[in-house]
Length: 355
Image 1 (cartoon, rainbow, N blue to C red):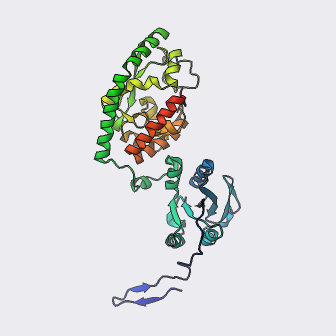
Image 2 (image 1 turned 90 degrees about the vertical axis):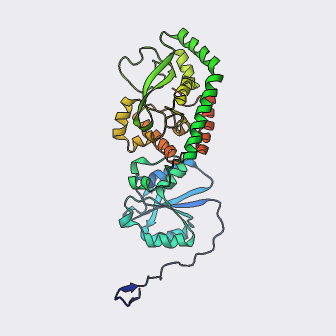
Image 3 (image 1 turned 180 degrees about the horizontal axis):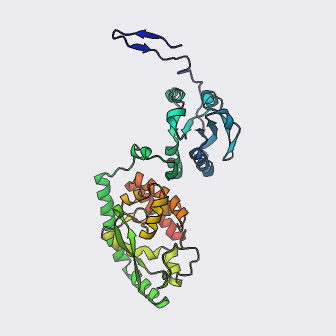
């Protein structure tokens, strides 16, 4: 029972009930694996569990789910069961030696067991937001379930002057050196393109760039001259519009080399979300949440999505790619850029994901 008393001003002061708070925690030996309990049974909880299980890491084990009420107990979600309710949080945590509790609730104001979670936080358990853990483990943002307030109050999206200045300086230096070193190769590729099929060597196409501004992108032509006489459409596997030389160019990403010109002009960066065509952007921003956030940084010749996901050739693929793009936009840094450039070298060497 809580105790109450009157202050000099007549205000009632209620002493907190400590009968269940700050209970002594049994001594635990350090575990090799982090044991995770997921609080919630909604889509975010399922997606997070799927990511953690699919990674198959030696250091993380998902124990199960907790539901708000008894009706879900015993259900199987993503090959794991709902092992209890929120009321049993303390008991389940002790029984299964939980290290981390991932909170995956749609409406925390009405159902979040705040006091119990606060007690466990004070005991040393790791209480994490489900969106944050999903981002950390998958390298992307769960955009369908993400509330604007989560992004607004997040710690990401920093644009430090030093970082952006160094990033632009690196772009310019690499673009100049790349155009000089690769000039003989570009001449050779130009000759092969002219011999292989009629039409211009270079292909210019409108793309959407920084702050949604359109610009003309430069590429080596990899398709037949009349490839889009029936209108714009996504590239597909074994696309008949692609020429013989064009297939080689796309496999080794050589068709992208002329975009170093766009980098020099300040329309692109070496690393950033891949630019999309206006006709597709208009459709995608209507069906994919937060799509225009990718336009808050310069588009790139390569990007986080290109090193983590296959070639995007549909609205569904663009939906997944945006999750990776937003991770990059949120966590932009020179270290991440260098990691992406290293990953791009691997993609180019093995010819992965090309169409």
